[in-house]
Amino acid sequence: MKWPKSYRIGYRIMRLVSWDRDESRAADLAGRTNTGWRITQYCSDRAVCEQANTILHEVIHNILTTAQYDVGDDTKEETIIQCIANGLCTFAYQNRHLWRKLGKAVRM
Image (cartoon, rainbow, N blue to C red; front, side, top):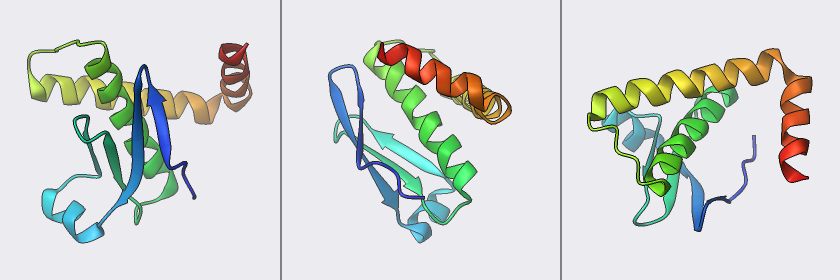
């Protein structure tokens, strides 16, 4: 799937780029974000649904950073974010019509 080259969270415009497969595997990560460099990387050799989940996961990290919200524990933060990303992906898949309607509603 061809993803957009960037996305916006608040005042930040984040570049969205494919991450080198070997580097991703060496780091044992599917994605990562560096808000200082304003870049989000995802591993493009994974299934499209995994890429979507990873991008959503990184977007949630950016939302927390933009809101200056600190969970306080990195492991706990990862668990919470993964739970939310998984839940939103499942919701979007199981409720496509409602997901599209929500997207239209927030643009109004």
